[in-house]
Image 1 (spheres, rainbow over the protein chains, first blue to last red):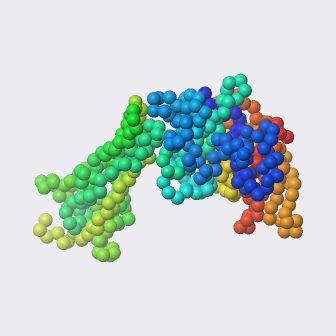
Image 2 (tube, rainbow over the protein chains, first blue to last red):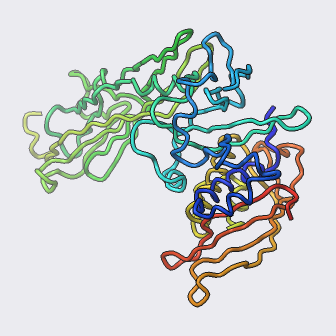
Image 3 (cartoon, each protein chain N blue to C red):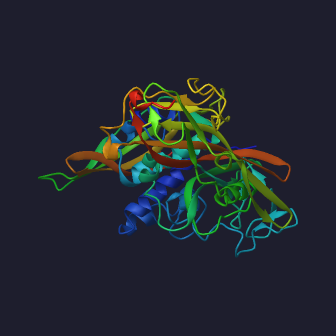
Length: 312
Length: 122
């Protein structure tokens, strides 16, 4: 069970990071806190977990590459001293440094800025938690968000799920509107995307022992009609077929223009659609959800006045 | 800064604008880091913090741009809770000697760094 101690056990350590980062020039300050009870958090002489709560210093310390720690591939995990440790704790997976990593999705821009910005290059944000022993056998976890450059620090199912997600190739959005060609004011327009644009997609990432498959499924199409209106549809829409009443509205995804596009740029409205996909993953007896994806398509659509209808 | 932190920690709100009003640089990074950690763990903090700040240096004295503050931050009544309810653990809070640097930059005074020491240090 996680026993983090009270709130400031984390901050004491991180506070030290802040101080060191802020005033490495002030050697006396660093020395003053090196002894006594705070010696264990002296990031200057004995880097400990938690000293990496500063962005950009986490890379290379975690990971399954190098070091004696991490997962040995036979289902056991070890810290850098070779002592066996649980492979998972509180949702994180053991890295080579003996700390635990869990990917963090969707950090807001304000958070990333406060953390020092997103470093350039490949990498990802992880919640890093390290545990230390307390007298009496309890353990104390501390940590925070870190940027890990390059390869992921652990190859846990949820990390593989994100790798699989990044390998998904979603189809191009092909828009089909009916009537074909020019639309007419007051005549229902049927909106749809091609079946190929609305087909679930899968991709897999694997390590020896197990694989994770991520599957993207389209759930929503938000249409912007170019005349200021928008329509949300929960399917690809229906293609109008000959024999259907031309005055009927689409049963599930349509729009009726009330103004011509003559005044629009190029004499046409830009009709765009954003398809939202949910992405789920499964494998290794586990399943979960990762952030969704979107695909976008657009076409110009001319809308004429209805008096141009002569032939029907 | 502390009241903004106390407020933000009620919901583990790492994006709290108030925090950015009172804290910058390493101080902000530290607090945001802590709140993101709370968010990920499903942890919040409730109650209030006790402070007894006093200024220990002002530089330069004629046109101050940097002030250091010595404080005794008391989290006896500012404790971690599970977001789902109930105390996070059975650890007591207490007093922590804290030094903070407040810096004048871009026309504003903000806490730019702080160091909070162990429980029972003041």
